[in-house]
Image (tube, rainbow, N blue to C red; front, side, top):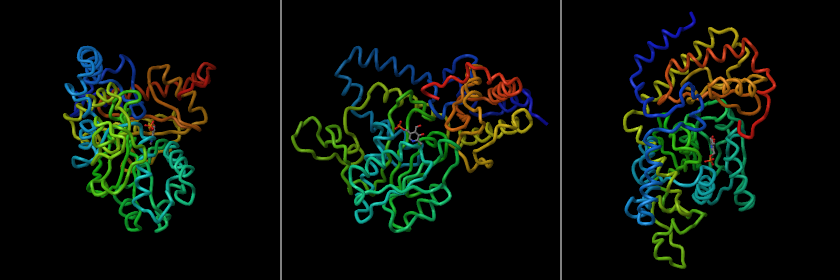
Length: 413
Ligand SMILES: Cc1ncc(COP(=O)(O)O)c(C=O)c1O
C-alpha cells in the first residue's frame, strides 16, 4: 500500500534528530533535495558570516589574525572535520579546493612511490579528479606520471605492482554508488600502491574511519554535506606516517615554517601546515568552521540511519506510483551500496528537474539524462519527501515538464 502523509508524520514524530532542521534556514515552502551539491545556510553559519565581517574584519581589522586566531583557522577547521572522518589530530587541514588539493596530494603520493608512474583512476570519476591527474601528467611527462583509468567494475583487477597511486571517489557523483574504502585500500596496499580518496559526497553523511582503514590521503569539500557555503574551502587528510616523506609542489609562504620571517629560502612547515600555499579565505573558512558546530549534536551513525530511512521512504512511495515508472533508478537498489542520493535516468530529466524546481522541489540534473536527488538528513523531514513525490507525480501525470520554458538550458544544471 502506498504510504500516506499520516505515515510521513509518524516517521517524523519518531525521528530522533528531527529537531536539527531548526538549525537551518530553508526558504519557506521549498523542499531542498540538493544538499549534496550545495548545503543550505545554518543559523550558526549566518551568525559567523555577520560576525567575521562586522566585528572581526569591521572593528578589529588586521589584529584579527591574532585576536580572532584567523591564522589558525585552517588547522582548527581541519580538526573539526577530522572528527567526522575518523582521523586522529594532526592529519587534516582546511584549504583551497578539492582540485587544487588533489594536485598537491597526487604529486606527494607519486613521491612516495618513486619507481612507479601510473595513477589509476575510474573512467567515470568526477571529471576534475581526472583533469588534475592529466595536468600533472603533462607537467611531469609521461615517463614520470601516466593517468590510466578503468571501469568501475575493473578497478580491483587493475591493482598491480605497476601502479603508483590509486585515485578514487568514495561515492560516485552521478549514481551514488559507493566503493568499499577499507577493502580497496587493503588490496591496493598489498600491491604497494598509495591510495587517495575523494570524499566530496561522503564527509558529513557517511561513517568514515580513515585511520582505522589505513588510508594514505584523502580530500573532500566543505560546501556539500558540511554546509559551509558556496565555494567553501576543501580539506586534505594525510596520514601521519607519510608527513615527513614528501615536499608538496605548491610551495607558498603560508606553508613555510616561519612565514613572518620572510626568509628568501623556502623551508616547509612540519605536519599539515606544509599543505598551505597562500592566505586562507578567512570569511568563507569562518563560515564553514561555524557550520560544523551542528555535528556536535549528532553522530554520523544517526545521520546515516536517517538518510537510509528517508531514501527507503522515497523509494516506497515511488514504487507505489505507476506514473513514475519511466524514471529508472540508476543508483544501487541496496542502501548499503550507495551514498545519500538517488539518481534516476529519463530522456527528459533536464526538463523534469526544471519543472520540479519551479514547483519548489529543488533537485539537480547531471548529463546525460540524470535527475539527482540528495537526501541530507540534518534538515529534511519525511513530510518533505512525501511532498516531493506528490509534486513529481503531478509533473509526470500532467506532463507539464514538456512546456517550452523548462527546456531552456542554464549554465549551471
Ligand atoms: C566528487 C567530486 N570531486 C571534486 C569536486 C570538485 O571540487 P572543487 O570544486 O572543490 O575542486 C566535486 C564537485 O562537485 C565532486 O563532486
